[in-house]
Image (cartoon, rainbow, N blue to C red):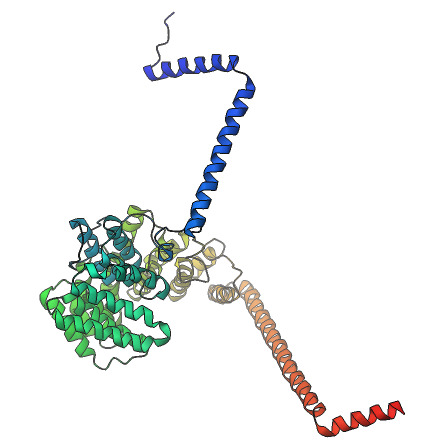
Length: 490
């Protein structure tokens, strides 16, 4: 009989196990208890020391050692992904790799990819903690979040004496903006635009200051400041494109003309995606222009391209769909454009796909503008527009169009489904849903009347109480009360 030959590592394991068993046989069991107790004590002491160290720092468990602003935001390190735009933003830093992350972060800012921009700037600071512009970039990525932006720009201000005057001007401009606070939104927005203008005057070769100024002047409309001349802002952005024809400020030109004269941005619509091919939003935005001009096939192309870039990002970086800025909005608009050009089955497939996606409780619920809400909305629209009554009825019994606990959504479901039943000749089912809708309407009216009556009663009751208090406070009343008291004494 042949003996079994084990691999070297396995034979060693068997020998070690035999030795361990023999050792256990001769060692008293109490010794193991003592060893275990010593280990437990050591762990407890270690935890106490960690807790003590945190308390000395004033740092809650799990929070960043770099300050409160770092508690939120990206946690994984950045990498040079490519396709984020041909931009250069010279920064005082110790290594060439830091400059690459600065450039990538700025390109991502231009593409409104703020979360990833913060990640890139964080990576720059991780490599070179003294790079002031890295903290400026983090503040820029959170420019609409004053609390976090203040924390980041404060770190840039601490290092501003070590940088060039141009960098210092950028840092001081953002510092003044966030310090002013949102209550002075008009004033600080106007002042920030002026600060960017001063950089452009002093450093005319710096096209990034012009690009950011163009964006700020357009964005100031939302802060209560008028945009007096679209052509003037367009001329400013054209100066950038004259030096760098594929600069990602094509994105800003699209936003500028989107609701004004979309045809003015056609040349930027043709170049925007190619200017930053790795950023999905840069493919999406040309779809705005093409949709406004009723060039729906071109809009479909752009939005499909945007979806593909998002899909690549999801696969590459293990990201859930609705964690991506603009993902759901892009796909729901693509559904609409597909319907315009008769591609109904594709619109239905895409809407169903949106409903099949993971339902992240923070980003993707019926009450939020995520894939679930948009997918259901566009699925009903597609089935109704192209009178796919049998398919609608069939899907009503599945997870795609199932009943929900949302009142408004249920009204919409019963309305669409009732129409499908009536239009397909299933009148009995249609009447059942019509009765349900009528009951909902009756119940809602009763609730409104009840609430109105309660509000009126509260209002009149409060007025009556006020009247009594006023009457009680009159001098004649006081005299009458005094007379009553005297009479009672007698």
